[in-house]
Amino acid sequence: MITIKSVLEEISKHKKVLIIANFIAIFSTLLSIPVPLLIPLLIDEVILGKEGWITEGIDQFLTISSPEYYILTVLIITIVLRALSLLLNVLHIRIFTKIAKEVTYKLRKQLLNHLQIVSMSEYDMLGSGAVASKVITDVDTIDKFISSSVGEIIVEALTLVGVAAMILYLNWQLALVILILNPLALGFFLRVFRNVAKIKKKENKAIEVFQNSLTESLELYNQVRVQNREGYFLDDIDKKAKHIRDKAYTFGLKSEISLKFSQMLIMYSHDIFRAVGIFMVLIGALSIGKMLAIFAYAWVIMRPIDKLINFVHLYFNAKSSIERLNEILNLNVEPKYEEKINPFEKEKTASIHLENVSFSYDKNSVVLNNINLRINKGEKVAIIGETGSGKSTLAQILIGLYPISRGTIYYNGVDIKEIGYECVRENVGFVLQSPMMFNHTLRFNLTLGKESDDESIYKALRIAQLYDFVTSLPDGLDTIVGKNGTKLSGGQKQRLSIARVLLDNPKVIIFDESTSSLDNETENRLLEALMHHSHGKTIITIAHRKNSIEKADRVIDLNSL
Image (cartoon, rainbow, N blue to C red):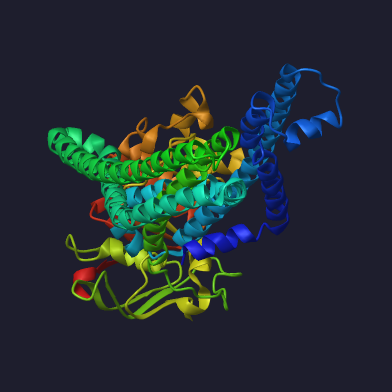
């Protein structure tokens, strides 16, 4: 699980860089702290003629005959100190920004690694839009917390301590006024923002719902347009967008009010502080130069306090985002079975045996109940059944996408738990009825990033009856297919999906109504080519169409099992 503590521990792993960053922060603070003191104290020494360490210090190195040169010298020193402090501060921020990006990269990697083993039934219930919202938006919130808060808080805390020490040194009575009133205002903000952070969590949830709905609607927009339902779906998305607006408005309003009210309290403390300072000058308890120096430090102290307020703001936002990220990490993972025996090794194909297999998405809805089935090596089997009988679910459990609730699955007499899902998926090909396509080239959609030579690709395309189409394209295999294959027909996408599986040369192939979009002639040619290519291999076809059923050695009615 992710926590604020675990994030900070991840930051602390960069020890050497952190030590360098902290030394830079200390040196930057040491350079900046004296700056507000120099020019105000020069008023006492140059204009009022009082003795002081500034003019005495300059006289040790330079021979200056007029006040103008003292002023110019102090101005140059001030400019140089500010520039050096700024340069070191930028270097410090750069270091922490790099650390922040490394930490947030590891967070995303942790989430993606978990998604890699999450049960597909769990993932399907959550939705891709919700996952994307968390992995992008919430991790970005944590990134801001690390780079804009954790990285700056060291410098600001050191500045706060240094400024407080300088003010106490100049006049401890006046210093107590500002050092007591400012923390009171900060304490008020902390108390109020705890409640405001809860609203931020609701806003993030509204964004997640909106993004999930938008993603699904856009992915299925062709279907929506065909059904003339774009008005309904866009209205629904609009309602969710308004929900985000309302939550964002509530969060923005309350957070800004609490922030402004806290700033007002701090400004009140400064008004009181300045009034007391002027009164002390009036009664002779404080010089004008020291008063102006303390006033300058009082403004300097505003920056660390603002940063502390911002730190609290980002802390609570990050805490809410971490809770949402943990929703992904709390998703159940698919069972992890180590490969102990590989029943496919040195075998051309495999037999399949289901013994008392049951599956349900939850305790209340049983999809498959006590299924017993034997498929011999090299057998061509067609599985039929009424809509909703669990045909596609059966295909999913055979390759381990949906872990079974009860029972055992055997390949070549070996329990799938002894084989491991990775080994099964490496050797059992699965062709979907409605294959998904990347907005990439035909080559990429065929290989999905695997190394494959053109000869093997064209061989698979010939079997899938897609060779003539691909070679007729100006860019051939480098043709971009569009989002989810919009440039391809339904039949072309199905055949491309078949070629994709054939490239892996699996020892068992499962077709889930994978030729439903083809005309009879093309389907016949495809099935004939498949039977020839896959001679001796076990093939399971989930089918309704006559052509697919006729090519099978045996037809199994799922309703009768």
